[in-house]
Amino acid sequence: MLCPFSEMSKASSSGTGWHSRPVIFTREQQPACLGFVAHPCDAAGRGASQSSSHAVLPIHLGRRLAAHRGRHDHMGIFSRLFGSKDASISTDNSHRRAVYSVLDVETTGLSPRADRIVELAIVRLDANGAVVDDWVTRFNPQGPVGATHIHGITSDDVKDAPLFASLVTEVNQRLAGTVVVAHNASFDIAFVRAEYQRAGWEMPFVPTLCTLKASWHYLPSLDRRRLADCCAASGIRLTAAHSALGDARATASMFADWLRRSPAHPDLAEAPVQAAALVWPTGATRAPRAAEQVRPPTTRRDRMIARPPAPALVSLLGNLDLSKVKYSNAPENFEVYVEKLVEVLEDGVLDADEAAALADIAAVYELDEDTVTSAHAIVVNLMAHLALADSKITTAERDEIRRIALELNVDPDTIPDLIDAASAQRLAALSASLEPLPDGWAFGEPLRVGDKVALTGGDPDTRDKLESIAGERGVIVMSNVSRFTALLVSDGQPSGKATKAAEIGTRVVTHRDFVELLRHVQPRH
Image (cartoon, rainbow, N blue to C red; front, side, top):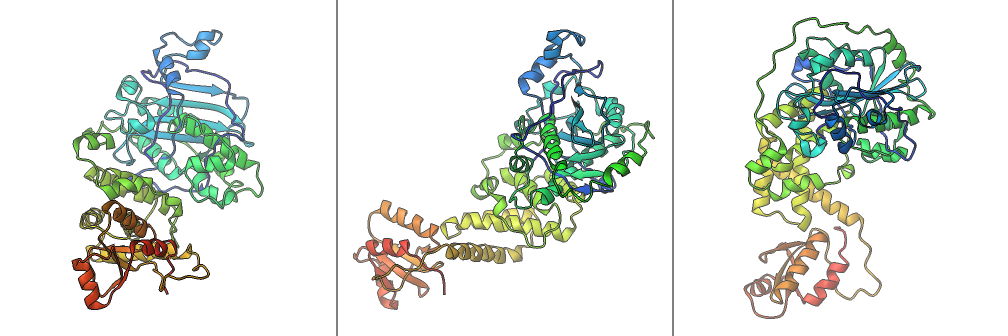
């Protein structure tokens, strides 16, 4: 979810750029999403800004572009293929009037306040969704490039790239008079606004269409609404994902498809009118800010090198299908915040930079303190679900849940309730999928979801398999026998557990009968 970047390594700020035919994607491609924000909140005053998607040229093409040293020859085949050494590239079909500017950014991190744009792409469309032109550039972030494993951009790729301030006039000219469209627009625009401010410019509150929000109008049945999900549902191919140009082109193609659908999104009528009337700045209003003190690299890769492997539960968070998590009465962008939080926690540590970035993201999404607290509690609940996959939580797992909860400022007194809630949710889900007992059932009282059992004797490998199956079926395997034990599974040989079961009258079954009981576990009464 960190933002990626576009093509052009080792670029300079001079030159006319690389021109080719505009690309209009077909319905085999993947889309982005839309939602209207008439006056996005200026997060800078709250220590945050806004930013969004990703898109890039193929890396091999970018390297060719960077390697080429000649001026652009519009008639030469070599120049058409490889362009020039300029920082930006573009396609042009300028006889059409641009109405929408679809943008995507790749960034060094999650915080508009503390992190920088390393790649920006803008694809402009006319009123009907036809491509007018597209443009992409990389920037020198004056510090670490961030998540190279996501956006593919290295420090060498941008060491000779221009600063944002040197191209802010170009960016301004491309955006002026248009509706800004992006997937998760608040995030992208926050980053662009922050870069404007660093350059001494003031970006106006521009009419914005967020395709993530608009997907609820055009794709109401989707479980997840990432750019890739929305593109797939719209029949749009997403190529070069997590590059600024790749993501911007896919978003533009998807948005163009939506423009042809009926009924139209209700905000589409007014947004272009407001955009055309908006006055954009023509220059800086103050001196550019001096480059901030560069923070030491704290990307996930750096942390993974410096720290021991992530604990078991938190390392599994990223594998969860968050589309299956249901949120009741959740505000806009709540799910997006949860996804970013899960991403940040993937290495098992929430450091100061990450905590600050999450606070900035919450400000960008206008999430209040109670909403953020709820999101953090949900992540703790998800960790409990992971721990309960075998129907029990070990001491190590409980300690890990508590540690992460404390890092997220979740009240420690609520942790048992969150774990109990996860257990109840899991058992309810398991119960809902169970079949009734078969005719002629001959094994007595069935096992029920949530029952506690103990095992003694028999082959250790067989016991391990039975314990695993029991956990998956919602039956809790205990290490001892008590009055809460539904039954003891025994090979008939004397043992301490067998003696205890006889004392308190616990039911005893064979391993063979236990297999049948597990096949037909029943819901709780």
